[in-house]
Length: 76
Image (cartoon, rainbow, N blue to C red; front, side, top):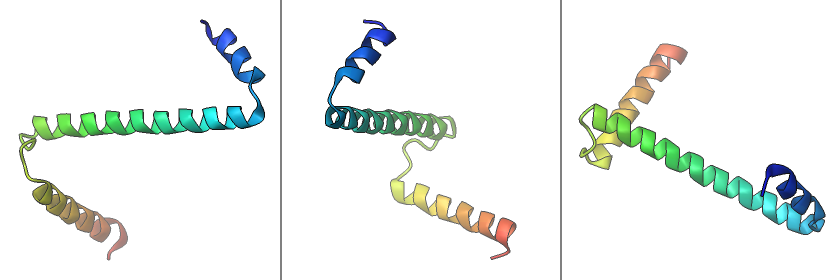
């Protein structure tokens, strides 16, 4: 099936079915992007030698970085 045939099938759906389909597409797209982000973050941690680091340690480091950025950017 090519993109035009798919578009024709979608256009033939009832409005409610189209809305449900589009909602599902958005959800799936979000899940795919989240999975990609998680994979990239795991790769970053692996590259930095921190893949086995406990979540609490990672969050503590992120909090320190957030505070440093706030002081630098906002003088807070």
